[in-house]
Each structure stands twice: as structure tokens, then as C-alpha cells.
Length: 285
Image 1 (spheres, rainbow, N blue to C red):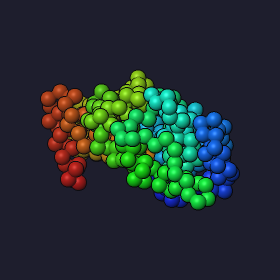
Image 2: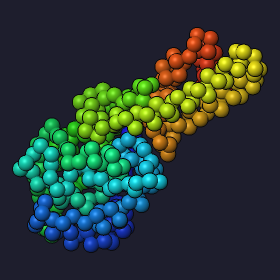
Image 3: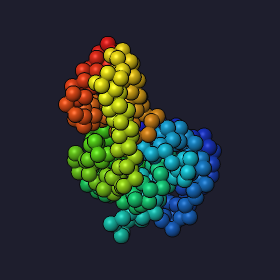
Image 4: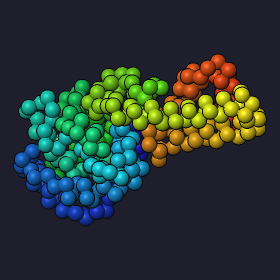
């Protein structure tokens, strides 16, 4: 999960030009009995969301678009709220741009209708003179909605990077209640996610080991080794790019290089790779 900047005041034109307002009016009357139309909230926003999120799930950073299509996920659940039988869901936000994120099917199915809060839950919006919700009950970064104190992290409003870290075994670890709850509810340590993150690290580690072994056994000279290992370091650097899958894991691979890479090497290889990496960071490799 990485933080994303979304312009809440500029929804996609397709959404604006749709029959959204008619459906909002109906939802305000029928509440969670409203027949929510994915043709309104999904088809009009999916292109913009895929571009915004670099074709990655907002939560796990996986690109599943070549297989199962992405889902448009409601951060605040539209029809009901898990654990609160009296709440009719955030039906008035079903077509609200600031409440829509991009999710893979695994994260979306795990999140379901979970929306724990620490503050007071809003049951219905206050309407303006035209019969529509006041903007303060629509925008996810308004004082009213922020006042609910959502526990689940939202990459569009939270500095999500402050709430978790990764370990070399491919697992994500929460550092506070919000991080831990988000990881638990969205199952961000599910088997396949851990596998692919760990494989990403292992592939780089294998290449580095091979280069160092060739160097220490004199199958490569110093210049050949420097060149080859520089290419691997450059790839690891690029793994932090927001366009890459698991870019936040890539950040930890780079920033915690000794823990993720050097500590997994035998003594001579570790000493060599740390020297090479320090030269790389100084631009002298």
C-alpha cells in the first residue's frame, strides 16, 4: 500500500455526465434498499482509477488486470456496515468519487463491509436546499467524515507508509492499531502475497550471490563485478517506483539493504556487497 494523491473535487467526466444524481436521490429515499448500479460507479470511473493507481490494487499493490479485472471498491461500505446491525451503510456515498478506490478481488472480498471506527458513526447526511447531501458529508477528507476516525487505512487520505513495515520474509507488519487492523481485515499477509514479495527479493538476492561468487572465485575481475552488481542495484532502486508492483516492499529492500540482502550472505560476500552498495549510493560504483 502506498499513498496516492486524488483530486476529490474533479471526478471523471464520465461520472459527472452519468445519471449519478438520479441514483443519489433514489438512494437518499430508499437507503440500503437502493439498487446500486455498478454501471454508474464502476464503468464511469474504472479508467481513471486504473491510471491513478498505476494498474495496481490500492491495498496490496498487485496488478491482476491481465487476469481478473479490477473492482471499484467502496471505502465506506454502501449497503451495510459489518458489526453494526442498525447502520444502513453509507448509501449516499455509493457514487461519490472520493469514496471509490481500486481493488483486486482478493482484497475487496476480504474487506467486504468492514469499516471499524473510533469516533461516532454517521448514519445519514444533512441535506442542502436542493435535497442533496452537504459537501461535508460527501468528501472523504471533510471534518465530518474524518470525525468518525476510520481505523482502516485509506491510501488517498492517510500517510499509509507510517503505519507498517515489511520484513525479508515478505510479510507486512503493522506498527499501530490502524496498520494492524488494516493488514488483518484485508488479509495482506495472505499466502500468495507473501510468496510474490519474497520471490521478488529472492530473485535479486540470487543474482547478487552469483556475481559475488564469481568475483571471489576470480571468474570475474573487479571491473566486471562492479558493472554487473551496479546493474542489480539499479534494478532494486527502480523497484521503489510507484508504477512497480510491491513498490513499498521495494523501498524496504533498498533502504534496509543490510537486513534484506547483506545479512543473508556469507561473511566475505557480505563484506563485499556492503562496500559495493556504499559506493553505489555515493555514485562512485
